[in-house]
Image (cartoon, rainbow, N blue to C red; front, side):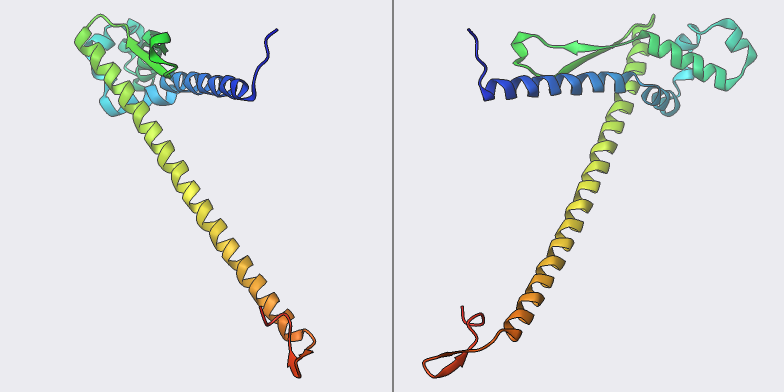
Length: 178
């Protein structure tokens, strides 16, 4: 019979969470927001070999929004984001990202642009959540300091209002003597 220890169960849960995290990042890398950002920032719609892959009717109309959408579709269709690694990676969560395109040079430009847009997004999220975490910690600290001050005030009031007791002929407030 096979029994699982709590540690084995925890490892299983951690592994599942890591797999979910990797899958999430794979979706983010291929997301329309990341691809659009890469297209806009690096003018990927102006690369001749990319334009060559678009339907002629889209190009002939000259509608820039339609061209942007077609470039977005082309890039997303040819962007491959998959889990990389094997047993040799000791459970590392790694993505392999590639772009299928006729021109290796232009394909590298597109791929670098996608990766840069993804990294920008992740950096922004880390900074945003880090900033939010710091704000929450500061707020909690201020709330706790206010609670401590309130407790100190309540205790001082309690001590002042406590009856005195005689101790060796002297009146003593037992709560004031600690």
